[in-house]
Image (cartoon, rainbow, N blue to C red; front, top):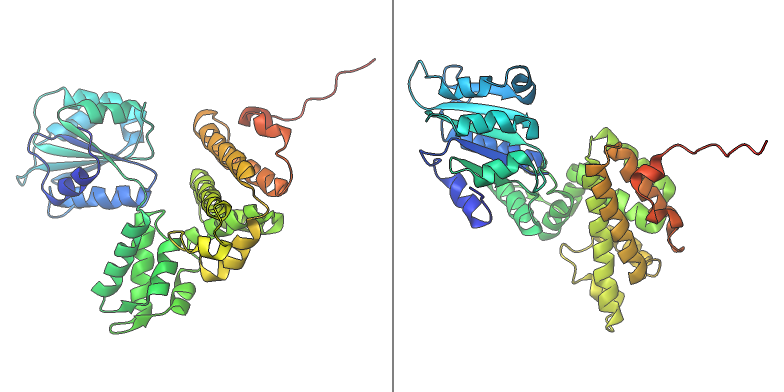
Length: 364
């Protein structure tokens, strides 16, 4: 069963159907995967730490003993009630073990599978989407409105208020990971205290060092051709263990926003006015930097940059080369390009760009 859109919200609100044996949660938002997995677990057992009704497995456990998943699903709880089997870090190497359980006899258990980003051709994802006793539940990053609602709800639940500009700032810098967004929102509420109001200065102080701000720094450094700033921001992102694909997508969003404003300017709008059309709006401290990048990036060059970023993401997923090296290489090249013509190496594959230089043939 393939879940999408409103189906997901309804599915998470209710106990899982009695004939459902497994739910595969997947996607780039690891925090959302974990949060939704716990939500589903809580609808099966009262205590997810209950050793009699809950079994926790990893992909490595199944690699050592592929039959263990079926054994845990078929086990009967000593204290009665439905069992919960949690499988973490799953990938396509777990597909056969799950297939065996789904095709086997009925079991009074729910298998909650936590996976990372699974492409459409993933065997595990396709199994969950097509099997009558399984469900595939995608977990993609919240959109801007959802992030704003999440932040505002967390603050209000703690008895505090948040100013509109502070909310816009927080929402613009959060959202890449549901768990991070929730923790940062709770931190804001704690900072304000019950009955307090979170101002823009409070939001900058509390959220300023989040991973999303590092992504913002990277994007603006690339757009400005600031190699020193890019190096610092990339080091910070590496220390925060930010996924290289998330970095590429953040830079891509920045160029898409530049393209939106340039399109409006081409139709006669003034740059400042065009920027107000962006959602979320450009943070006021970044507005001058954003405007300064517009003449550096005509639309043809923006489209070329977006194509290179997309190519780099594909290379990260398919070449087997170090994804961080692929991402950093293309970002440095874009920053170096700045207002210059696209270098010829833009047409090379990641394998060609990262391959060590070959020595010149001997002329002797």
